[in-house]
Length: 71
Image (cartoon, rainbow, N blue to C red; front, side, top):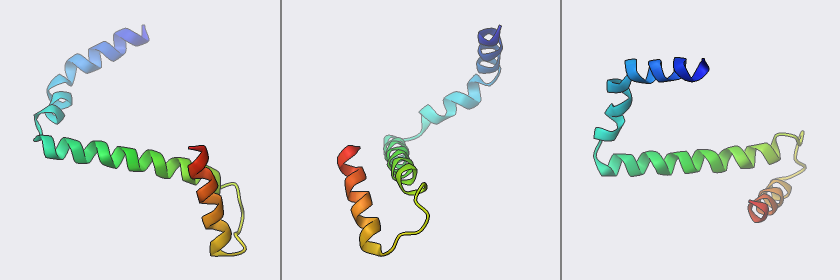
């Protein structure tokens, strides 16, 4: 039932959904790059948001470096 709903919405909005594919290659590449940056930022934010206050900029940098090694 949910899949039928999704399929109807895709069919109804197909022209709007496929507009994205008509963009030039350079714009598509920028979109993919910004998505990658957003994912990376989300992962770093997940690590740092649970910490209240950092005692110094160096402690924040160390935590981000450790997170980079895990990611």
